[in-house]
Length: 342
Image (cartoon, rainbow, N blue to C red):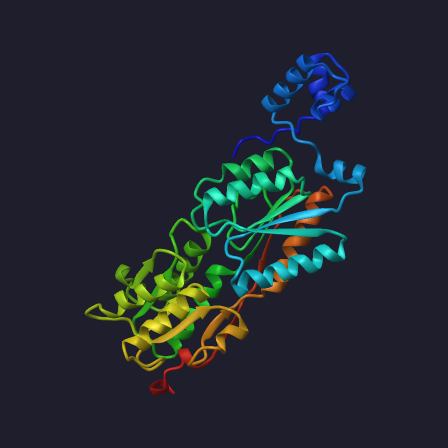
């Protein structure tokens, strides 16, 4: 992590060029009162020093709406919609408006969204990292330039930037233990790309449960590619075609879980007696499928409340890098309790 830099001010530019703050300000606004040569000098230096107007001060001066930018990987899922609802309600209570933009799981989109947010002078950014993101320099630049930034769910956890996460390892450990307690002998794990923090953490919890229960660790029972319905379907077909297929699956998000359930049914196998399954999803969606899905349930609305509070604290000067872990709940339903084990 590079050392945090002080934000460049109008005074810094003015001092370096030996002119006044008002001249710099007018030049950056293309005032006709300033000569073209001086405007060129000032704008060139502003770019070199990575000068950005202070959005907080600008909004106060212009009496503009106070705006927070939210980056979401997938705006259509209920998981993220519920988090956004929590953010929005907390923002409104504190006289802020929100702008929501979806990266569609794209690193390039994520970078463009940040530039768009900065250009409209949001006061701070709340972000969930895309599946493609491996380079976090665009977020480091925000931090180094004093732009208020907090993360939720999938995070860039460098210990300096505030974030709100779920208890990923503990919840996967709890879910795997439940499958074992209900008679599962060979438990598979379906996850996303291995560089994503929540994938690593939930896989760790799954593996630790197997170790603690003296189960053999079998790499072929772990399939980690992409967080999506089609990937859940394909991974389950692959797992159930093994010479010794699993009799239980832990799928680490809702899309993977629903894809897995469809694959099991297409193979004319029974849930849970042939293959029991646990997913990660919300109360409502767990009841839409047959059988009802045992699931690790996130307190998504609370996550949204808490991450918005962190950002507002950050804007008001609290930059302690606080990390909040929201506990999950294992909601047991029909998909994980084998009838022959009752």
